[in-house]
Amino acid sequence: ANGSSQRAIRKTRITTMRELSMEMFVNSDHHQNKEAYTIKPGLADRLKLVDASVGGEDAYKSFKDCSIPTARFLDVSNKLCQPNARFPNTFPGSSVVENTLGDIGLAESDKVVLYYQPGTISGACRAFFVLHAYGFNHVKVLDGGLWKYMDQNYPVVKGEDFKPAEKRKINLTE
Image (cartoon, rainbow, N blue to C red; front, side):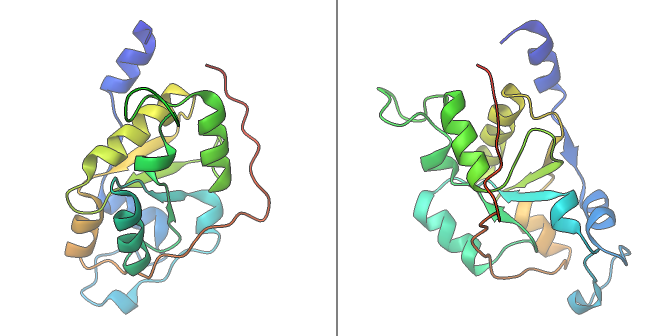
C-alpha cells in the first residue's frame, strides 16, 4: 500500500454506540425498553449496516437469529477473499469485491458501518481494510460489535437476506 493509504488505515474509523443510535433512531436517548426505539425513516438508504463476521455458515446462522435492524450479511470467510487462490484468505481482486458488495447493495459512495458477532472482530477489520483499499471512504467499525450493542439494550431483529432491487454497479480499480 502507498504511504497515504497506510496513514488512512492507521486512522481506522470507529463509531460509538451513541453515534450509531443518533443515526438510527428517532428517539436516540438510551432507554431500558427496547420497544421505545423508533427507527428513522429511510435508514437503510442512508446508512448501510453490515454484519461482517467470520465463520461462514455458522456466522450466517447467527446473523439470521440476531442482527441489528436493517443490517445485511457479508460472508467475509467465503466471499471477501480470492477464490481458488493458493493461500486461504488471499486478498480479493476487484471483480470479486465488485460482485460481492454489489450483491448486498453496497457502492463506494455509501456510508457503511461494519459490525461483528461476539468473538469475530477480525471479519469487520478485514472488511474495513478491503473496502478502504478499494476506495470506500465512508466506512466505520462499530465499537464493541453486536455484543456491546445488545448489552446496551438496543433492539435486535432476526436477520433477513438482503436482495437489492437492482444489483449496484461498482467500478473498482486495482
